[in-house]
Image: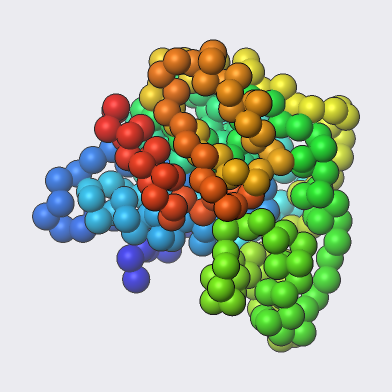
Amino acid sequence: MAFAERTYSAGDGLGLYYRDYAPEPGVPGKIPVLCLPGLTRNSKDFHVPAERLQKIGHRVICPDYRGRGRSAYDPNPDNYRMETYVSDVRHLLCALNLHRVAVIGTSMGGILAMAMAAAIPTYLAGVVLNDIGWIVPAKGVEPIIQSLKYEKVFASWVEARDALRRGFPDLPADTDDEWMELTQATFIEGQDGGIHRDWDGRIVIPIEKLPPGDTDLRIYFRALANIPTGVVRGAKSHILTPAILSDMAAAREDLIHATVTGVGHPPNLKEQLAKEVIDAVLARI
């Protein structure tokens, strides 16, 4: 395997999982990269981008948040909130003796990266926000929130794949094999043989307690002012709209950004434009 599978203890003792992609032997070491997934996602999403960065000398760390993937579920669902996730990431970096990293954050992972810029700014050497901006529109998020409340056990991987394809047709996949790859990063086979979601359904509880309306993250985005920053947008995204990205670029003249055609929320970072944004940010560090 290209990565080692490891665990660490969060501040409250919860056991959390991460993948550690060590640089290939003989390749000069470069800035470590921390990959933060979306709301229900996990470390599997970053496998291909992580391998690419690993081959050019970056150590890549891909954690599963609490309640996702191979990390433990939290007995108190109120802990599924940003303050806890920032604390978990800080404990991970301390455990690995990493004091400065580049962060690639997809969707909620990008929000977490912005929160880190406010809470623990010295850790950040560069940031790539994948399909998330300084405003999160409530209308765009609503279908995702509703999907969290829908729990179904599928009889087969094909059934799960077809359901994912119907529910989120703008995900970055075209062929059956690509959709199956996405499906296997989204669900897990249970002991009953059924295909289950690979996250704790209770992560929606704190989200439902948030104030209604759009979420304004401009104060957190501005905390990135002195940090090389890039933004990747999916052309069909309802989360990061053209207007939001345009406003961000106007406020930050040195912002590196690109829009990936043909996909919605979020790009998978395998796209050429996405790789160029990541590489451009890393080159500025």
